[in-house]
Length: 111
Image (tube, rainbow, N blue to C red):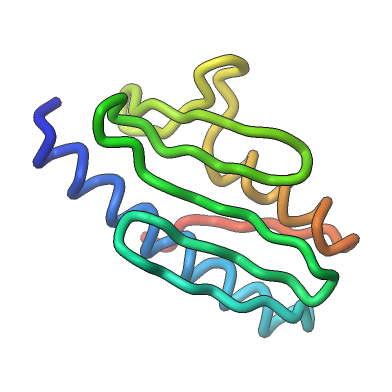
């Protein structure tokens, strides 16, 4: 994968994350602010906690930083997978957002 291909896929994923979080927040009443600056998406919750999703061009990964820890994802066979557990990106992000909000949240990538 070239840097350009990585950036295209990763940017699409950040866009999808922002859309998914905003949609779920409206559906279940979660107070969250999404702020995107370049290759970093910051999710700030009303419970005074944050999740940071950022791109790592040198590694060609997407990283999630949250109170539950850090997660690194590589693009494998059309899916972003955790480099340690092979868990899919949106599955992990759903669990992390659920932990931050205290509500069960299921985020999906819109097609």
